[in-house]
Length: 118
Image (cartoon, rainbow, N blue to C red; front, top):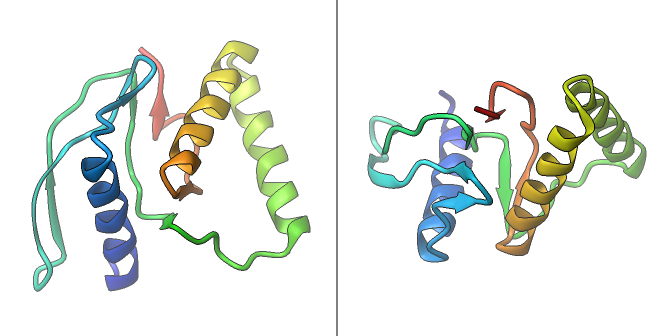
């Protein structure tokens, strides 16, 4: 894992811990247990589906400077990906993204492997 990805993931888990966010709806979020900056290791709790995991492509407090067209394309492709499994799933994902944004986390790795239903 590259340093910047590890830093972003750790920052997201620290924010979640500070805000005491351990779940969003019925989707569990791993809890930060420890970390080692020199080894780029993050220790977190184990979760079972439904869950939200993998915050390495997240940004805390500031959204990356992507062009609006790129953001629109990302949202459209993400919607298409999740809606294949039913609109309720996509609605869950939208709610999760909104809650994460409300605590300052901009999550850009929304895919069924990372936001997994039971």
